[in-house]
Length: 339
Ligand code: XIL
Image (cartoon, rainbow, N blue to C red):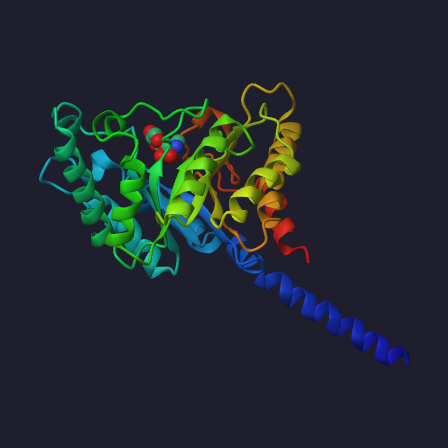
């Protein structure tokens, strides 16, 4: 009898060790939940820092070019498209079995001078935007898992944000962009992406109304991206996040976390306490996403290491500057591996 108990215990331990080994990275652990684990990638760093590239290969299943697909980079002149930087990132992703989130086709920022100062008519602007969407999406046809088609189109009060697109084409530029995107690459998932819309508020209400209308009239849209640039000062509960995410899932769109980072800001506390609070914020977002059944399909962060981030002084990511795991990393992997 004793022998049987010993053998069973040993077997249990061996199987458990093997199981935990299989899930020792975020991307492996994410598979338990059909969840892609994403990060923004800086192409220049990817070229020169092997540790950075290796960490991405090991830990992430989806990447977003941080700046390389933005309008002024990819379409620098009226008749000129430049895919050199973005191609490198897409190639890296495909070689390593990583999905790509295209970011972004239509935004009020990163507008090149030729466009800003071009004084184009409504018809000309429609032509330019349609041509932009078709050229970029066809270049990457079949290689991009999801596109942030339109980025940050609303103000926090729910009105439409001023942009060259709104001024020239009018509010219907959003709907048209989604229609053109669907035509250009019917298999890519099409997302609307924004910040400060994570809980129910004027902005998320306006986005909700727009998507509800799209669904009614048959305008193609597959998902909403919540950017989640957040900080330790920002207070939201899991309940509030779930309530907002759920209503989007209920009208038939996927919910993705697209650009999560958590600024330490000027919180007065020891580093240990700050990192624990940061881990807690990361956990709240991940746990909320996991509660949206099959509709929260991607948990993406805006970078991986505090060495390379657009928020340099705020240590907002899950690996430190030495590429070591921070408490936020441990918190995420522990949530993902819990049965
Ligand atoms: C940021 C990049 O991280 C920076 O390198 C760049 O200087 C400015 O843009 N919302 C978005 C992203 O959708 O494209 C932004 O990325 C961050 C906010």
